[in-house]
Length: 283
Image (cartoon, rainbow, N blue to C red):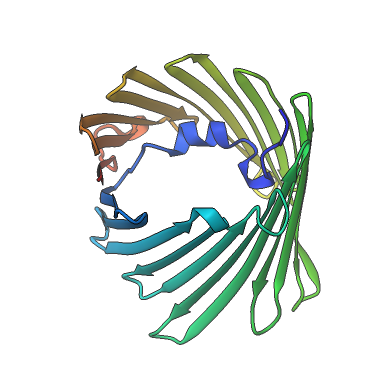
């Protein structure tokens, strides 16, 4: 391992086993297209089965590969307009700068963020500033890694309140086919996870969470199995006896269909189960 992941990506492999490929309680459509001059369009729409609320977004993205610059704009049905400018490996090798702005025409609310990341052998650091009229919030993180071992620290400081609002530690080991990750957030929430790639088409993970505020412990295990190059199956179960399953099938090049369901095995006859449908199209 030469460059470790940034702090937010530590333990990502196990989180993807539990999070990706599921869409409980919603119907979702994603459409991605690209023009001949490399302008990308991403159109997304989803409907919540419980509330009936429909959410949609349209995003455009253009990459100036020769200059390491990416421009992106996004509009949502909640009337939020966001723009993003990313510059990578231009000012210095391994340095990435990102400028984000958002504007809500209905309320006139504006926000801006400056994000930075710097990576080199055995180190990956980030520094973000979230601007606010009352006072900006500053967040910084650093991860060091050596021979598979990784350790990271993340902190956030609210300048308006002159208060530390984030104080997180993380430690783990990243082997060739397995990853072990643990973290402590604000000395009150503890997480531990194990990710294991059992074979070329089977991934498995387990995760444990404990919160001191409620003294409650949650536990879940899950797996992802690639049936073949066109189909995959996911399953997960937690200590609340909730079972989630999902099946993804590539119908043809650029078209994928996902069916998912969350079943409460404690109340099989009382309902409360959720189903989801997702369609991804790319051209």
